[in-house]
Image 1 (cartoon, rainbow, N blue to C red):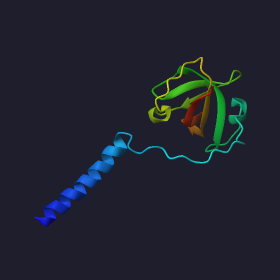
Image 2 (image 1 turned 60 degrees about the vertical axis):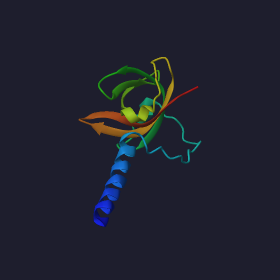
Image 3 (image 1 turned 180 degrees about the vertical axis):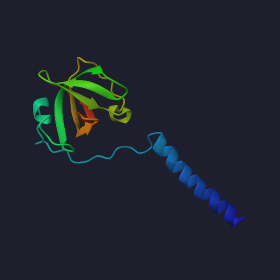
Length: 122
């Protein structure tokens, strides 16, 4: 009988951990933000190699597919990939200026930015 309760307890612990993860139970941790990280123009971002972290300010103007969007800084355009969890409940229209932080990526020959953070600029 003790073995049954032990296995039941292990099952509840493991099940509870997956439940918390699936439903947002893991809150994002805080961390250091370097105030000296400058935003880059899209022209400068496009000169970067793959897997470089970049920051851009501009507007998300159009949804291209499920998680890809057109992003502009007013002079150039670039495709950005934004997963659902990155939005963190924010609603953004093409008229709202945003700050995006992400990693340069080449996917099927297309240069894009895999966005890790979106923040509306006040």
